Length: 369
Ligand SMILES: *Cc1c(COP(=O)(O)O)cnc(C)c1O
Picture 1 (cartoon, rainbow, N blue to C red):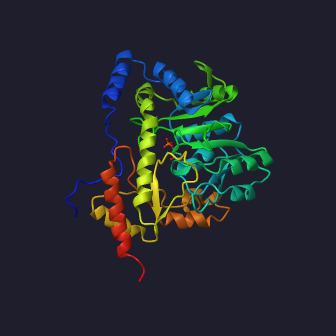
Picture 2: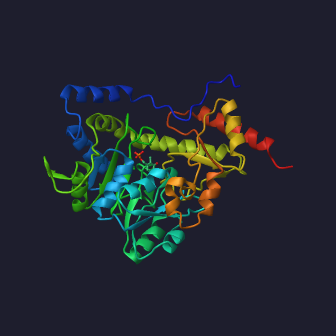
């Protein structure tokens, strides 16, 4: 065991932002308005501005953000929605929650984001939308995906749950599609002290429909014009997110520079996710190795905590078996090899050096004879 301090995968206790977070909570307690109040409205304006969109609508979580965006686009029962095989299961669960059928397609080997050719090949007469995922904080190949969507008149709802402030070819992600979904789960690049989410869109009608859907489908209080859901952002989360939003750009720069250090220091033989776009916001930094279990045990013995994102392709999970109509060999193989190294703005350069040296020692010890 190492005598050095452990390096946790993530530390969610407030740090430099603690005073601002406490002040935000205090403000909400003093006001006594806890759900869909003034903090939510202010956060919606601030998050829309930060994201480059006309509207942001706060909802209960990222899953609901995707589901309600699809419902607002009139996508539901009988409709097919294409999702990538390597993502959080919640991407597909959101499609199911909207009443539609997820169609799972394979990902690209170097970025693990949706393969646009696989997406094109999966289009049927029932396909209505594509939900690309900006996995680990890097934009999917949106030029290629947009051209598939344009060819078949499909909607696009971007899953930006790991990609706050990311750009693709210099343009803010989420701003060129019908709608985009964000999560503010505590571990995300912008996270609250509980669940939270938002949809961004430039379309006034979609924004109004999501506002109605999140609040039970009421147009005015007590008058439900459609069967919506209860998916409201609360003022405590919104106030905390408002306290953290101004720090996000700087934290994103720190994530990028820590990731660049990993790329400098890790052994060249170790497979990493290719940085196709410098707008990558490094929510996670996975490496891939056939010896994942022993690398994870080695790092753990040296006080370094790692996690796996994700251990199973969607097509191999019982909940999605009915939607596994396309082979996804790239996602299935990656799921057996992925290991996420610690990467958060709280890490120091020394931490990253220590992790990289520990990985290098493991790789040297396992060099094939
Ligand atoms: C976190 C996440 C979600 C779900 O967000 P919740 O807020 O947990 O509902 C969906 N997709 C991806 C890619 C995620 O990382």
